[in-house]
Length: 341
Image (cartoon, rainbow, N blue to C red; front, side, top):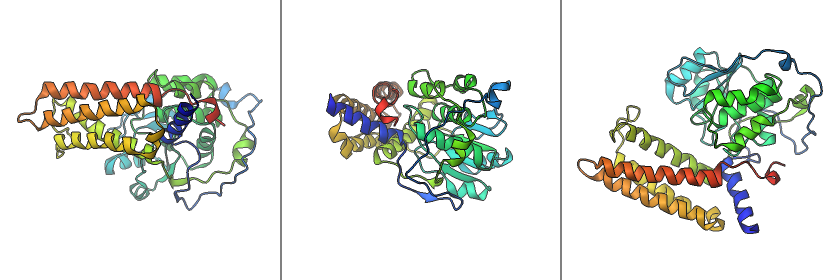
């Protein structure tokens, strides 16, 4: 049991991209971070936000920003901005700062061309770590707005982070936190994210002001988390193709679907070879092997001329169900208490 717990702790940290990253590409305006973090101060005063009637999150009428919701007048939560059109939409919305809680490398260069500053504060699906929530709250309090906070799809991690940080910064009352997750479509199975929103508390302005944070444009991410980011991107392209009866999706008209399936198979194989996996429980390795085999079946089905739609759908279903089962057991549960320190 001790070995299993240690591995789960390692897996949670790697997948969740939590807290102690080495410094990445620094923003010129960043502040030095110190080892001594001030003790947490919960505000005992009646928050100005608790005296307000906060409207429900508003879905924005945009075309290139997935699941974009305005949380407060200055905070927008959504999915990954990809390409010129997405960053142009952010510019049209007046966005000055982009906070990414996703593990993949932000497109810092394209953001700069639209007058936007990136801040990379990634975290996982198992909850918003305490320190990370404080850092995002400081970003919301002190960096130029409006601020766009995003994960990959904009449905789970970014709404939870926005809810936690808005409560901590005094932008919304505690009672509004869970409503953000409900309106933006956060899945009920992401128990750690819901717990983070449910347990958020307003911080004192003095605590936020004293908190030293070095806001970086690109954070260093553990290899396991990077592997999962790449796998998620491949899987998303295949999911869009499946929705189009196994034709190249509109967004990726030139992709070779059988090759995408091959890449997915190799990504599962390579993940099993990561050093972290040597300590992994057999059940996790079993999930990866089952997914690798199903991705191989998908590749073969898509190599047939014409592609075997029924066989491809069956293989894709196996990959989907196996990944969901693995996520439920190893990725999505709330963070162990010992990891919240």
